[in-house]
Every structure is written in C-alpha cells, then in structure tokens.
Image (tube, rainbow, N blue to C red; front, side, top):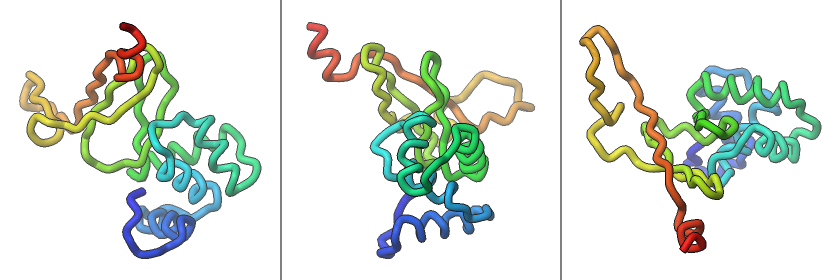
Length: 150
C-alpha cells in the first residue's frame, strides 16, 4: 500500500484502496492491509495476524489466510513462496522484483529487476506461451552473516 501524501489516516487509506480494487471494506481487510504496508519486510501470516489483531482484536488464522488470499487476488498484496520458508507477504508494487535470501539467518531482501522489462528474462519457449512474470531467488549470505562467518 503506497501511501500518497494526502494526510489520510491509515484505516481511511486502506478503505480507499479496497474500494478502488472493487473489494468489500471490512475491518479485517483494512487491518491486514495496514499490517502489510507498515511492515519493514517480508512477513509471514502469523506475524501479520499479530499486527492486525492490534486493530481488530481476535482474528483466526483461517481468517488471516482468507484475507491475505483476497488481498493477493486483488493485486494489493504480493505473496512470495521461497523454498524452506513459510509464505511471505509484502505490498504489491507491480514491479516484478526478485528476492535475495540469506542462507544463515533467513533474511529476505528485494532485488530490483535489472535486465529489461517484465518478466526480466527471455525464456526459450515456443511462441504459444505467454510468459508474464519471472520469480528469481538469489541465495547467499547477508552482510551481517558474512562478517560473522569470517
């Protein structure tokens, strides 16, 4: 959720984004959208649920996944599946970025697409295929883990 400089309160902004996406506005959706947009990184459903509950009160894990799925389907949230990690969520920026994962601490960092336009790669497929996105995961050590490994 990219907040324009309108001075709107977070809940009002969340409601506006939901309406713009053609979604019904509910407290759970607004709270989850705020939790994702105010998060410093790529958080899992449990962590987002804890943050959203600060606004909504009790929120079941099933409701959390239902809301995250609806927000993802509406193009407001991006779900990233990285092998060995639970699904992670972030604000959908429609920028086709990739990810770097630290093998030691598990930190995830965005990596901008630097080769051409989306999908950033040219797969060798027959012309009948319509490639729309490339999901690349880079693996290695973050600076902190690299420094302690020496």
